[in-house]
Amino acid sequence: MEDTVEVYMDESVEIPCLYTFTKTPEMVMVQWFVREREGNRVRISYSDLTMQKVDEDTSYSDRISVQSNSDGETLTIQDVKLSDEREFFCQVSGLAAGNGEGRTLLKVFHPPEPPVIEGVLSGVSVSSDSPAKIASCETRDGFPKPNITWYRDHIPIHPANGLVNVVTLVTRESSGLYTVQSDLHYKVTKEDKDSHFSCEVSYFVPAAVRTSESKGINITVHYPTSSVEIWKESPEGLVKEGDTVEIRCQGDGNPPAPIIFNREQSDVELDSYHGLLVLKEVSRADSDVYECHSLDLDAVNHDEVVDTLQLTVHYLDPAVVMPKDSEVMLKGESLTATCNALSSLETATVWFKDGIEVGRGHIMQLQDATFDTAGQYDCAVTVPSLPGLQTSGSVHIIVQGAPQMKDAEREIEQTEKVGGWLNLSCEVRGYPRPAITWSITGSQSWREVVKRETEEQVHSVVMLKVTTDIVAVCNSTNDFGIETKIYNIRSIPFSQTPTARKTSVDNSGVIIVVIIVSILLLAILGSVFYFLYKKGKLPCGRSGKQEIINAYSTKEKTSKDDIVVEMKAKKTEESVLLKGVNGEKKPLNDQNNILSS
Image: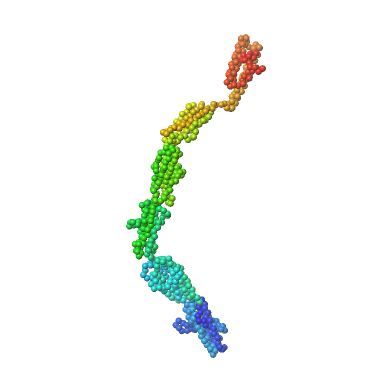
């Protein structure tokens, strides 16, 4: 038989019993026994050549079976229990052939549950004189009894006097399984604040040893403050006047000790909250060395736990421009202007005029001044290393001088038709501002329609009607001189247009037609009177005839005279119509005679 047979709890197991004889036995009897806890043996099975049975009223009566073969027997146990871990005996008797007995120890195993680790909820102080409990590890329901090993950062922890102590509690449950609890007592140091502790359970299984490791935990270590660190939290970079500055201080103790702030040369405690000092709208007066102290009474030398910070508040004073406000120059003169601002950092200056950069540097040179030189000059002072710092100033330059016409021409020749209107412009610069007067000869119809004035400039526009040649003079004067601009305007007489001539011709044609019709009507009327006279229808003598003829002649002459006057005024071709048949021009009396006859 095998010395030991191993099996997991609740499984089945077979225990073989093999035997041989030196000679053939007449009968073989095999009995199976088990040792009780008290030490006595109890038979659980019997077999021979004629029968095989399981003994009744034992703890194995319903859980075992025996199978025989030519080499021996095999005992099978179902649903193995922890109580089955005992010795089993196989007794063989061949009568005269001999007898013998063998035994096997049945070992039963049950893997424990994975270990559960818990750290202490309160922190552990490094100031403790003896190891303090920092964690507990437990594994349940194992058989045989499992073992627990502690690790720090995956390195085994072994008991050490005054440093490490492991307390193990083993509990045998009613089921026969073991529960093992292990408490780790450890003298922590400051370095343990970042360490991870874990426990490992080792246990036996059939033909092997296995392990199961817990998760790692970090414990809270309490240690005094040994140093503090102070730094400027905001703003980033350099500090300027008007900023809000936040200074943070933190110690390396746990739990964090209270922090106080003060200036280096003052014992007055500054208002702070949880290690944060806030300085609002700082000025250059806030520049100083700031200290922070830890109030950790557990510290060995708490008075020496201090750190310092140099705070420098940078500033830029308002710009000072020389000359101040305004400066009067004469045309052609030169001027040096300066712009300076006191600052804790290096500055840069740029000059502008009407928004356009005209120079760089603290000094601006104005050479050979003209009216274009006049105006406001702005200087902008900045701190390149601290963009938020900037200031500005200005100076107003006034250039005095005699009037100066905007146009280069001083005498302008123009032509315009009679009856036309002209706009004459005169624009002058100068300081003091010039006065403009107009002197116009040759036109009474003129007026000033535009007059615009600035500090050093005047613009005047007059509108006039051209009736004849005109001379217009613009005079501009101030305290420094006079400037004149002359317009010579030559008038062009009005000429008839083709449309007017066409209209005149058309009117003349209408008049000619009227004259011809009138002549024909007079001729017809004279013929009628002559016919009536021959027939004796008109009782009148020669004198009456003569009066009629004279009347007709007078009327015709009057008409003809009017026609001649109109023709002379209009220069028409009526004279052609009054010619005779042979093309000669007849006197009016001759024409009358023709009508009479």
